[in-house]
Amino acid sequence: MNTKTNPKQDDFDSPWKEIIEQYFKEFIEFFFPEAYIDIDWERGYEFLDKELQQITKDAEETRRYVDKLARVWLKSGEEEWALIHADVQSQWEKAFSERMYIYNYRLFDKFRRHAASFAVLGDTGSKWKPDTYENSLWGCRIKFEFPVVKLADYRNKTEYLGKIDNPFAVVVLAHLKTQATAKNKGRRRAEKLTLIRLLYKKGYSKQDIINLFRFIDWIMHLPEKEEKLFWQELKNYEKEEKMRYVTTGERIGFKRGYKQGQQELMQELTQKGGQISLQKWFVSVSKLIAKKYKSDAELELTYMAGLDADDLSELNELIFDFQTLEQVHEWIDNRISSKENQDIQDC
View 1 (cartoon, rainbow, N blue to C red):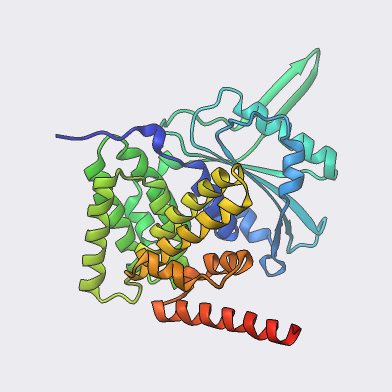
View 2: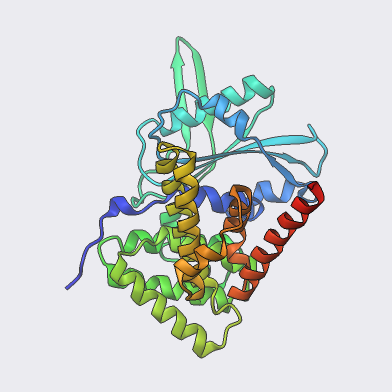
């Protein structure tokens, strides 16, 4: 019997925003190859987040789409640079074409340049494909057209996507598999594991595997029971294949969950005063160390006694860079010794 997940739990927007920021060049290459050919990628590109916020400031806070604005340089040298406004929309929107037009003319008003407006539609339907905004009054006409890519068009191209090296082939597969398994937790777990295996088979670099694993893990949400089964299956696969990233999956998932917990903790503690915040933060980090390296939290808390708030903040960021508990302790010892030496010099 199939068990159901709540489709509302699936977060498409946040993972898409992050993966586009990490692989903007590959995003353009995969979805908009005509533009990719004309851009001088050796000169890099620049995200204009503040400028985008200025033109979208009247948008509702609860909006459900991903916007990115980037400045790129052209090979031809014409105009020297150009603007790309990329919009990823995972659900139907009545006034989508109108919004794309509004943002486009606002960009022209601000920069005095015609921006390229690109749309990627990730909704589950196949018919909705708005690519034109038109309006007229007494002979005065407006017609704005923009390129649109439908992820649903890739549903019958999974074999093709599996052969492409571009990271967005995996991104599209993950998006489609997430939608297809919204009501079946067991199938989603199996599809998720298949995608992770694909990462290894493609021979991506370590950092690419980390980035794409994070996207897949984020978008293909699993309930606790299925999540535990997934991790066990992944560990078994990595062990059988003797992969060199044996702990990568566990590290990424644990780190993501930990960071989310830290954000919630700090929001809660900020309201209760700095002294309590620091105390609870020490306890939280000690528990993290104990869980990651299979030690005792109370013992780790004692070990950290000589650190201050700045040390704790730095240690908090470095935890996942250490390979062993001994390295953690060595870092703490060096930091405390440095403080003691400084105190002696001050005297």
